[in-house]
Length: 106
Image 1 (tube, rainbow, N blue to C red):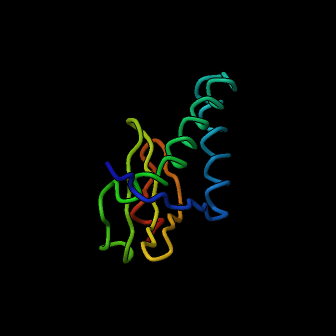
Image 2: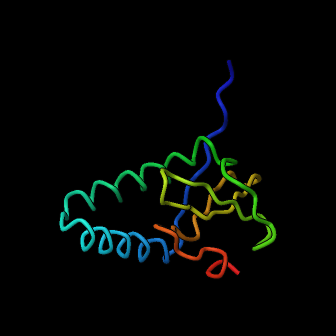
Image 3: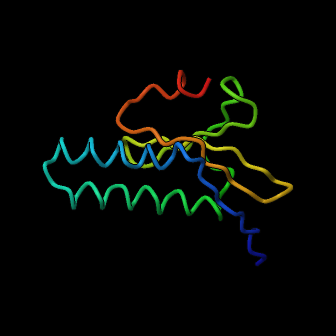
């Protein structure tokens, strides 16, 4: 069996802000920094896994050409674009808990 090609995953600078915002939100909500960190770590693992499954998620060309949004768990949406020629995945934003991704991505 031939293994699928591995893509490189890059995160736009806004993604770091998203991780911080999600961590702070979860820490306020749960009063447990370790639980917040574990949740964000699991989101980051999911994002890193896009290297092997870059075409997952739903195509959202209505918001931006080439945009895909993949859900993780019940509350997380990862917005990204795939560059097949360069074998890259560029993560644009990460949304958590019902944030309005459509408006943010237009």
